[in-house]
Each structure stands twice: as C-alpha cells, then as structure tokens.
Amino acid sequence: MSTSPFSAPDVAAVVLAAGRGTRFRSDLVKVLHRAAGRTLVRHVLEALRPLGLGQVVVVVGPDAHDVRAEIEDSGLPVHIAVQEQPLGTGHAVQQAVPVLDPGIRRVLVLPGDTPLLTGGVLAGLVEASDAPSTLAMLTTRLADPSGYGRVLRSGDGTVAGIVEHADASDEQRAIDEVNAGMYVVPADTLADALARLDDDNAQGEVYLTDVVALAVDAGCRVVAVDAPADAVAGVNDRRQLAEVSAVLRRRHLDHLMVDVGVTVVDPATTHVDVDVEVGVDSTLLPGTILEAGTRIGRGCVVGPHTHLTRCVVGDGATVHSTRGTDAVVGASASVGPFAHLRAGTVLGAGGRIGAYVETKNARVGDGSKIPHLSYVGDAVIGSGVNVACGVVTVNYDGQDKHVTTIDDDAFVGCDTMLVAPVTIGAGAYVAAGSVITDDVPAGALAIARARQVVKEGWVDRRRTRRSGDGDDEPPR
Ligand code: UD1
Ligand code: CA
Figure 1 (cartoon, rainbow, N blue to C red):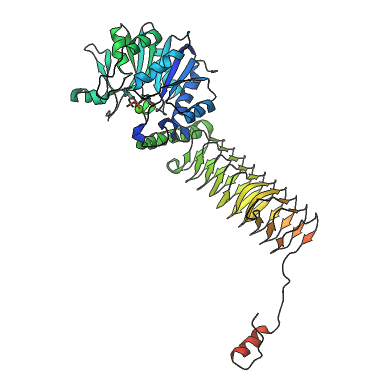
Figure 2 (spheres, rainbow, N blue to C red):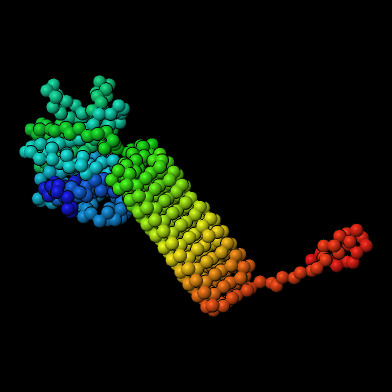
C-alpha cells in the first residue's frame, strides 16, 4: 500500500463514516462535504495512505453510493462495511469486525470527519500501541472542550475511561483533556469489549468510548498520546468546516512557499485547494482562487483575481483576472485581464487570449492571438492566427452547435461573424465587418459586407431642406 519506511501490516484501520451528520443540516452526507477542495473522508484516507497498514475498512450508511464512489476514486484498497442504522460509534465498529482479515492484530479506529489529521500523527499513535496488551489513544487539550468526550484519569494518573459531554458531571466538564476519537486497540480486546457495550447513556447510543474502560478492566494498559489540537479537530457543523478549510489552505500555501518556492503575495486572500500543484518561481497575486484539479507550471504569474477550476497552465504563462474551467493554457501564453475560458479551451504555447474574450471548446494553436472582445466557441484554430477585435463564431443555429475552423496564419478582421460550419483556409484574410457564411480558400481575401455609399454635399442639402426651401431628398 505504500513505499514509505513506516509499515504496520498487522494493523487495520476502521474509518467511521456512517453518521447522519445532523448538525450539518444537509441533504449531502457529512463526510462528502469538502474542505479545501477535498471531501472530509478523502482527507482521512490520504492521512492513512502512507502508513502501510494491512487493511482499511470504511463503515458507511445504507445507500451511501456516493461515499463508495469517493472511496473507489481514492484508489486505495478499501473494504466497505455497512451500518444499517446509525446507533452509535461502538455499533459502527461492530459492523467492521466481521470483515477484518485473520492476520490483523491491532485495530486503528478513527472518525471520517477529522480532515486535519496527518500520516505523522497516526504513525505516532500506531507506534505507541506496539506493546503487548496496550491500547493507545489520541488526546488533546482544548480551551473550549464542549461537545468532546473527556479523558478520565485515576489517582495515579493513568487513563481510566472516557465520559461523553452529554453524560458528564459539571466537574467532569471542567476537564480540558479530550478524546480525539482515534485509538489503536488489540483486535481480541476490541472484539471482547464491543460484545459488552450497551446504550445505557444520555444519548441512547452505543458508545465506542466505553471500550476504553472495558479494556482497562480486562487488564490493558492505556497510553494517551498527546496530539496538537489542530491535527485532530472534528467537523460537526459548517462553522467548523470553514475553520478547518482555512487551516488546510494555509498549510498548503506554507508548503508551496517553503518546500516548492512559490511567491504568495497575500496568503489571506489566496485560496488554493490542497490538491493544486504550483511550480517553482511562480507568483500568486492577491484574490486568486485555484480549485482542485488545477496545475500551474514554473515561473507563471497568476492573478490578481484569477479563479481557475481544473485548469492546466504551462510554464511561464500569465493569467490575469480570469475565470477558467477545464481549460489548458500553453507555456508562455498570456490570458486576460477579464477573460472567460470555458470548458474545452486549449490555448497553445505563446498564444494570447485577451480582454473580454470568452472561449469554449476551442483549440487555439501556438502563437495565435484573440486579443480583445470576442466569442470563440466550438472552434479549431491553427497556429499564428490573428483574430482581431470583436469576432464572433456563430456556432449555434438554435438547434445544433457547429464548428468553425481557422487554419494556420489566417487573419480575421475586426467585427467579423463566422457563421459555422465554416472554414477559413491557411493564410486567408477576412475583411473587417464581414459576415462569413461560405468557406474561404487558403490565401484568399473574403469581404462580405455592403459596399460603402458616399453622398457628396448631403449635409448641406439636409440643412436647406430643414429650413423649408431645399429639395426633398430623404435623409438616408
Ligand atoms: C466522538 C466521540 C467523542 C470524541 C469525538 C472526537 C463517541 C461516542 N464520542 O464524538 O468522545 O471526543 O468523537 O471528535 O465516540 N458514526 C458512525 N455511525 C454512528 C455514529 C457515528 O459511523 O452510528 C461516525 C460519524 O460519521 C463520524 C464518527 O463516527 O465520522 C464520529 O461520530 P460523531 O457523531 O461525529 O461523534 P462525536 O459526537 O464527534
Ligand atoms: Ca465528530
């Protein structure tokens, strides 16, 4: 599962992702909400990826097709267990036990709603559990521990159990050491404890947290591993979703600045999703939003105020004040300000798409230019083409879309309508103001507009007519 030095083939992870997430008030399952461009459950799977565990099981609710699809998309070999009803975290783990491989000796249980988790924190927890009859759990101290389970310690300081917030006395609620909800438990101890859980508590749920006291009763030693609060924060509502998203974005910007060598002029206004790659010596200017699936090359200047979704930008390109979706910008190309690159736009190396230009499903060859005020949709444009100001590909006849082809080195004059399907041949010229309905052969000049009429002396004649004694020529 991994090429990293850390490996624990006798450990299985069980990720709990079957809760209803009622506090989210959403039709979408909680673990499919996104933080910095990635779903909550995917963040947890990515933290597990480098650990080299023997098995990963995700517990999902019934009809969780979307969760299954998201898990498959991760490419990790994950087993699915279904919890038909969300009767509590302990009940969720009970559903996972039957699918554990025979070689599994320890079980790492973790929630699916803790996106700040890192592989390093989990590796520390797994290492701490690597002794006979040992249960390791992550804890942290919070200024505001409300909502979390509190860690109970005996007189000698050892962990005795966990009490949930809803069940805690005022005295227990004053404890600021909380359960992060992540544990490594010996597989046999876990199975025995799970069999003894009940739902006799304030919420009427089968609590996984009761496993800790049961394991202590069974003679287990409990090791509490202290984790930084911002590694284990759970996301129960959308306010917390916004908070963890900000932490994730900042972490990714720090990585880009420190490890890669990207200049981020104003991190506070630069939103870069965790899966976005940016090359060395690129600069991200303020107000830039780069969403998942976007890759920026080396030495680029992106922004200010550029918003790209699933776009690929080649080395040395400039993308200023632009909205782009599913588009490719070639090396050393220049885009914007105020361009709209819609899906299927592919701009070649050294090309230019300038101010107030919208493109869609358009291939624009190397060195070709569409500098101002044009709409280019469903087009195949060769290299070295100049599309002057105000050109429109008339691609839609009200029923179907049609393709405009412009071959290498052609020149399309200002304010031209290209009524598709139509082809402008290599090196051809189209005169400004033309409405082109027929193909233009290579090397030809096409002019498709009314001839200009000049009426000498017309202004004087109109003035005379207004004063009542001129001729009666209408002012055309
Ligand atoms: C849980 C812990 C609490 C801990 C906190 C840390 C319990 C009883 N409480 O509380 O001690 O401080 O996490 O974040 O475990 N889930 C299921 N099936 C269910 C219920 C929940 O799969 O029937 C999943 C949820 O999708 C979620 C995870 O388990 O990913 C945790 O459930 P949640 O309801 O968020 O527990 P907390 O109240 O946060
Ligand atoms: Ca939670």
